[in-house]
Amino acid sequence: MLEDKYLIKINKFIQDMPPLSVSVSRILELSKNPKVDAKMLNDVISVDPVLTGRVLKLANSAYYSLPNRVTSLVRAIVMLGINTIKNLVISTGVIFAVNQKVNESGALDMKSFWRHSVGVGVLAKFLALKQNVDSKLVEEYFVAGLLHDIGKLPFDFVIAEGYKNIIEISQKNKIPLHQVESRYLGINHAELGERIVNLWKLPTNLRETIIFHHHIDEVQPQFKRLVSTVVIANEISNKIWGGSSGDYAVDNDISEMLKVTGLNENDLNEAVLNADAGVKKAEVFLNI
Image (cartoon, rainbow, N blue to C red; front, side, top):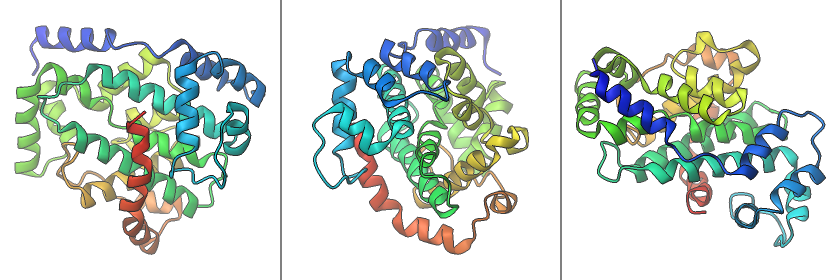
């Protein structure tokens, strides 16, 4: 079990994580309002030059593949839609804040970690489209996949050497990483993810994914499809890019999740074939 001094350091690390920008926090508040409109988003984003720049850069990236170059924020909101813009702002805001506190000599290779995270997001979005999820909501699947493992970062920063041992035990014995974390550290990355979720007051859909992607039976019914899709995407990503996020062991029996989502083996195989191209387009999220 982790000594108290390390638990204190981990808690301090989380508490000291840079806050989300004022603009991103205001977007999070607006996202709770079902009547939010393009003008409200524009009023918040437009006063933040950095955030405006991010939105326009992403809007003009290969990830969205818009037919014409977008030069105004209003046009980006109209072209991409309110929900996409909200999710774009949330995901880039969180990544920017998280990357302020990264340990380059940690247990995780951060380039591989983020590749895995982007991969899960891309696969989750692809599988959402296969389920005919409302086009206004598919970007939520990408963001949920992208951020599902952020709870690993405090371990990586605070107890890098110890976390390397945890990953090695998981790999050698083919035991899911979160189970080894709980056994040897007394806490796992989903539980640390919950603390980060609470710190930043992230939306419920992200909360459910980050906290329960290893305990699908505890997910609220209305988010079951979303989290099930992310879990399936996570398992596919681990098979394609094994160990890139510290996970080497198969964790979930996805048969029940396939029932929840209505996905089949052909859908999964197609997702695998499209994974690399999708990740290449989505990596722009990591370079803003």
